[in-house]
Length: 202
Image (spheres, rainbow, N blue to C red):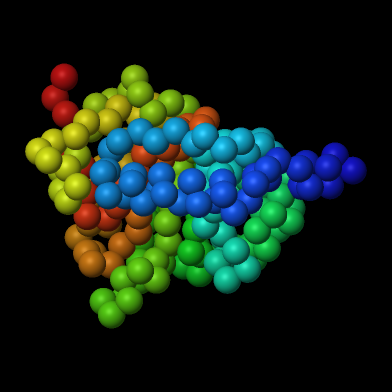
């Protein structure tokens, strides 16, 4: 009964208006990598899915987009919530997912396991939404590339040590590859595949 109640509540109060608002923030975030966006519309997804991650799911997922969930999310009320509010089918195959969500503290698997698109259709790839403890106060990373004037800095808390290597391998696939959205609470940062990320010396 608890699962059912959680699944039926927590969507956007005004689905069309709120989805448009979050979609615009995502487009702005992809156009300006590294900028922190704050989700305004209230979404209340079941734990451990965060507010921003939930709002992104409500905005982007539908019956045509397969979704992969990390183990902690898959065992929660999130599958029922996603199904009720978006109609998105779940997949256990990372390579079939248009969107993938991981809860905070989850080890990142190689990005090459997700769909990276094709040379002709690079957009047929997975967007990975990664929940973190915080988006500020962690190891400093430098971002360079389209949409960044010179260098942008981010300092997310909770990115595993393997992230930079995995991201470098992902960039080498361009124009193929995945895009990533880092989320924490109601905030998020977009990292499109065009962005070069390096460690910053303290």
